[in-house]
Image 1 (cartoon, rainbow, N blue to C red):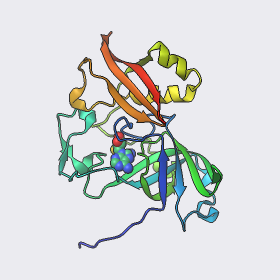
Image 2 (image 1 turned 180 degrees about the horizontal axis):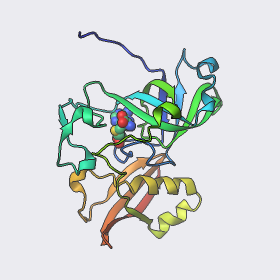
Image 3 (image 1 turned 90 degrees about the horizontal axis):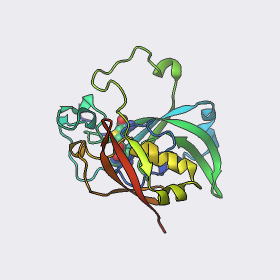
Length: 240
Ligand code: SAH
C-alpha cells in the first residue's frame, strides 16, 4: 500500500532558536528556551484549545522544514554515539528521515488569546528544541498516566550527555546582569556542546557563533581542566 496523505500545518513556531546550529538535540535540555506556537486560521479559535491549559506539557508534532537537500539514509550517525557509529534511522531521533516529521514534548506555560496586540490562539512553551518558523502539524496533551513509563529503557542513550562548564568574559557578564533568564539560556544551550561530534574533544582557537533570540553569541573552547572541557563566551552582539 503506497498511499499519499497530505497534511497542512495547524500552527507555526516563533522560537528563540533562529538557526539550526546550537539547538539542543532534544527538548527538556534547555528549560529556559522559550517559544510561542501561533495557531493558524481556521484553527486559531479558543474552542480548539478549550481545556488545554489544564496540561503542564504537550506533544508537538512538526515538520523539519529546515532540512535542506538532505536525503534520508537507512543508517545515520547519532551525535550521542560520538558521530562515528551508525544506527538505523528508525532507531534514532535524527531529523533526516523518510518523512521529515519531528516529535517533541515541551512545557506549556500559558494559553493566550492575545499576543503583542493581536487576537488569536498562542501557546507559550518552554524547554523546547524547535527552529524558528517550524510548521506544527498537530498538538496533543501529554498524559502522564499513559505517556510516563517508569520502566522504559533505551540502552543506546542511557543518560543525558555530560555538560560543559560555561563562563563569560567580563564585558559579556556585564551585559547579562540585566538579562538573567537569557544568561541561563546561553549556559543551558552551550553546556550541551553544539559542535558536531567530529569536532569534539579538540581545543582550538576557532571562534563559534550562533544567533539566539535577537543576539549573536560568540564563544570558544578552553583547554580541559580536571578532565572537563570548558566554554568561554567572548562576545554578545545585539542584532538590529
Ligand atoms: N525532538 C525532535 C527533534 C530531534 S532532532 C524529535 O525527536 O523528533 C533535534 C534537532 O532538530 C535540533 O538540534 C535542531 O537542530 C533540529 N530542528 C529543530 N527544528 C527543526 C526544523 N524545523 N527543521 C529542521 N531541523 C530542525
